[in-house]
Amino acid sequence: MFKKFEYMLNAILYSLYCGRVHSIKRQTKIVYKTFLSALRLPFLSRWKNQLGPLIAKNMKASESNLYNKRASTSIGMAIHMFGYFYSGYPSLVSLIFAGESIRVLHKFDLLVVVLAIGIPIGICYIPAYKAVFSNDRYLKYFQQFERENEAWHKKWKRKTFFFCMGSVIVTLLGMVAAFTIAILL
Image (cartoon, rainbow, N blue to C red):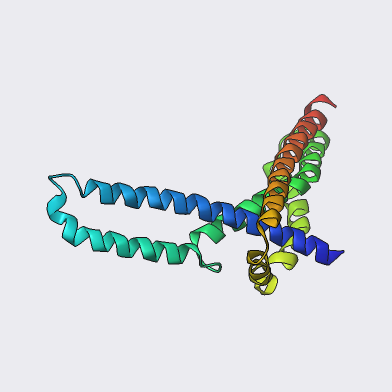
């Protein structure tokens, strides 16, 4: 059972990573092409010989850094996005606890609300951390996922989209539940 959970979380992280890589790659190409196009302007053409090779070198360096799965901007952003979306599911329980604490105390106590929200999310994040990040397991799964066919990638892109949208919906439901419990009951 845990292997399926581990596989699912790693596939979602991989899909988020691929999405970030393509997005950053597209943005980087736009920036570098803009610089190279600007060097064609008559008043900038005198720096073409000096800046052209420098821009090309930086473009290759940024692409090699983009695919570094341990320490690049794209994997960092994918990990943060994964954390945000994964924590959306336990936030339903957390927000209900926060609403209940406000109702019981008859006032908004920031420390109690932060603890009511943070503790369930922290406890629920432990299995995800163990499945994905302990001993860099995601790197092993990334190697496996890179060999998968296009149909597999499309399937997991859709599943990742629904995972993320489900997280947002569950978080919004938690906010409504917390408001209902704290104010209306």
